Image 1 (spheres, rainbow, N blue to C red):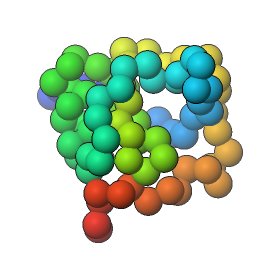
Image 2: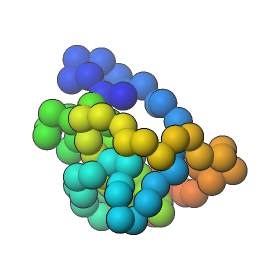
Image 3: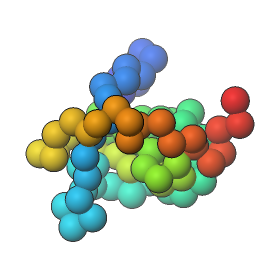
Length: 82
């Protein structure tokens, strides 16, 4: 969860549907997690997430798809070399 004045708070991993995204605004490709967060803040979004290790998505609320199995939440980010 994003707040312009605070550090982001992780809220978990969520299911998604290509026809009805959990986070609906595409922000960009090949961003680090920090860049994705900043771009979300710049757009006054509440939530951001990386999908497939390289797609940054954002929204002001979460959709209806629910929590994903934690085993799906460990894909490395393509531009995060830490």
